[in-house]
View 1 (tube, rainbow, N blue to C red):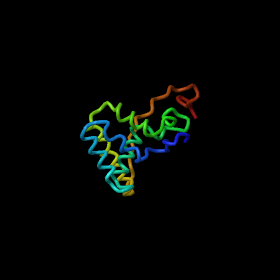
View 2 (view 1 turned 135 degrees about the vertical axis):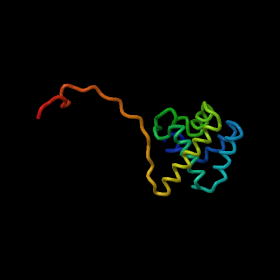
View 3 (view 1 turned 90 degrees about the vertical axis):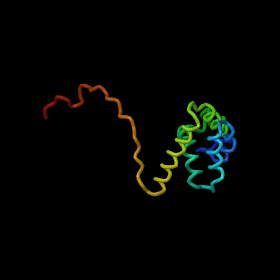
View 4 (view 1 turned 120 degrees about the vertical axis):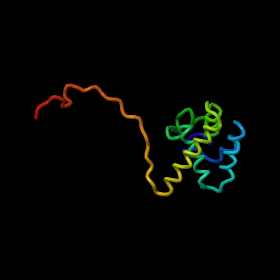
Length: 130
């Protein structure tokens, strides 16, 4: 990454800058993650929540987000979140559950929307006799 503030995934060092961007519930959530020991469940869940919200998995070295840095990206994501702090807390709880399941060795089941049906072509084998 070219920017000194850019990392591959959301860094917890950015969390203190996010604390005062929203209401009281959000501040408590950030404080909870910051007060947890390194790599504790709350820190991992907070990071996963931010990775999901910010789309860190699709960020690459020459993207606009990477050029701005993680602090600016995370700040924008938290400020622009359209839901209430309760929704962010729910995202955190979901991330915490997912991290717990992963650490316990249980398999996570991801729910995806079904793929759209593609039109059949003339050589798709429909109606052919073998």
